[in-house]
Amino acid sequence: MNQLTQQIYQHVCQLDPDQKEFQQAVYTFLLSMDKIVDELPEIGYHKVIERMVEPERAIIFRVPWIDDEGRLQINRGFRVQQSSALGPYKGGLRFHPSVNLSIMKFLAFEQVFKNSLTGLPMGGGKGGSDFNPKGKSEAEVMRFCQSFMTELYRHIGPDTDVPAGDIGVGGREVGYMFGQYKRITDTFTGVLTGKGQSFGGSLIRPEATGYGLVYFCNEILQGEGKKLEGKTCLVSGSGNVAQYTVEKLNQFGARVVTLSDSSGMIYDEEGITPEKLEYVKQLKNVKRGRIREYAEKYKGVTYIPRTGEGANPIWDIKADYAFPCATQNEINEEDAANLIKNGIQLVGEGANMPCAAAAEKLFIDKGVLLAPAKAANAGGVAVSGLEMSQNSMRLKWTSAEVDQKLQQIMRGIYENASAAADKYSEHNNFVDGANIAGFLKVADAMIAQGYV
Ligand code: NDP
Ligand code: 2IT
Image 1 (cartoon, rainbow, N blue to C red):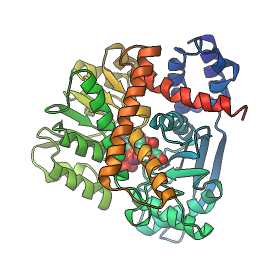
Image 2: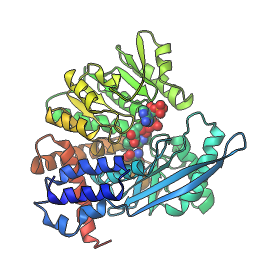
Image 3: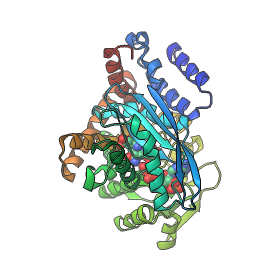
Image 4: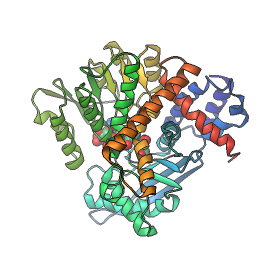
């Protein structure tokens, strides 16, 4: 690290020594900044990076709700409004017991550069709660969402901050939160994205992150004269991003052999066909079941339970391409070494920060094509941006129109990240390319808007 980035990193670690995920996201970002800070002295002069690592605002609030037994439950709610340099704060809400300020800040920080890469006018933010939706009744989820929004509403708005979904928050939760916002404020606006189709949601938003991931990786592969067709792929997770990644990989003629959840993984050598994927969607989205049930339904499928923190068996299966689509740090250094040993050629990050810093370094050092989350999973927020446009214009585009715009945006991100990599780093270093391309636009806006 050079002197400036080293100082910034030390300062971040001293200020918040417990925020390991946030420190990790800042650290890997600063490694890319090393490639440009000497060439662009105005970055240091205007303290652009120092400002970026401090959220404009971070709100923490109490969320009280009554469970089905009539008992009062209390959770903690968050909204980190990281940067409004490019537009209203924009980013998802995560409901998961692991949620804390460090995780919220890492996600909000990365969101700023991701949103910049989309080319749409969106700042960056993230929020959520340590509420665990697993095992809760429909009524409990609704009451929680209503209470969460009863506090959050005063901090958001269609021109201020526009939340959406993330882990544990899908169409159902967005619907309940939208209903409560509308009721409290007496306004029908595009204050949330990922809404249902009957009340302002955009077509292709549910599909967008997974589809966008595959479009982006396809651009990288094409640049190398490689393709998806006929290739074996590993996908982790079995939620929104994983499901639509499998759907698009199937459409490109690839064979996906794995899915997982926090309890374990399935290995289906024959491939997760469109018919089997429909079963997964029903199982996860309607029945809210576990991926283990896939192995009970289909013959020749192995289920491997997840035990302990060590190497994850999902990353020790021979395949051409891997798509981590579950959560942060799901690929550690040992997992990366296993993937490389088995000849992996591309890792496409559907989840946010799925690779530990050491894993990321190993992939780059060994020449594995790494499609970083900020670029590769930007399709979700991109279509959220398109949902905001449609809400403002009070019209609705067709699936084909939205899909075409999504493809254009992902191609644009690939071209920008690629060009920034070639100019400031090395060919095919999409980690540096995405960080630098995303950063430069935010930096320009921050310098132009003065010291705010
Ligand atoms: P979902 O809630 O739909 O699915 C999450 C999946 O990941 C589930 O299979 C879940 O398993 C698994 N998972 C979650 N936490 C853990 C954990 N700590 N350990 C192991 N497995 C875990 O979420 P999404 O598909 O929306 O999100 C997946 C990833 O993609 C996240 O990193 C998210 O930030 C990112 N992302 C999402 C976007 C979106 O539009 N939804 C956009 C861009 C990125 P289980 O059911 O057992 O918890
Ligand atoms: O991480 C992400 O980009 C998201 N969860 C989607 C955010 C959004 O506003 O659609």
